[in-house]
Length: 69
Image (cartoon, rainbow, N blue to C red; front, side, top):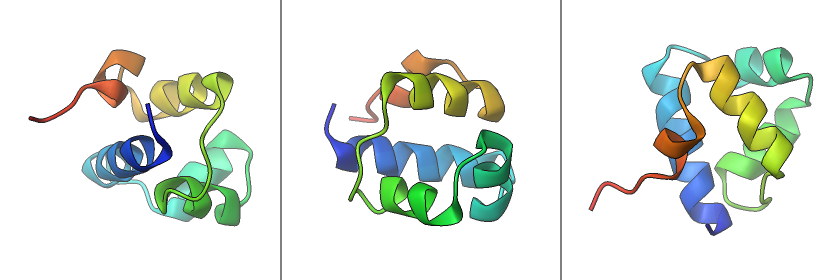
């Protein structure tokens, strides 16, 4: 999956679950700037990061990679 697809879906789930960028970044133990880069499609999250994000947001990795076609 390309960075833009991850970023868009991570941002959408973050907002849906009521997290600010700062809250999610803090829960993940990463800087706000790194999360911002992921959401803005400037950084591709590692597999481990994707798993951590899905766990914190309470969604499955499959939900993060599903497309809304």
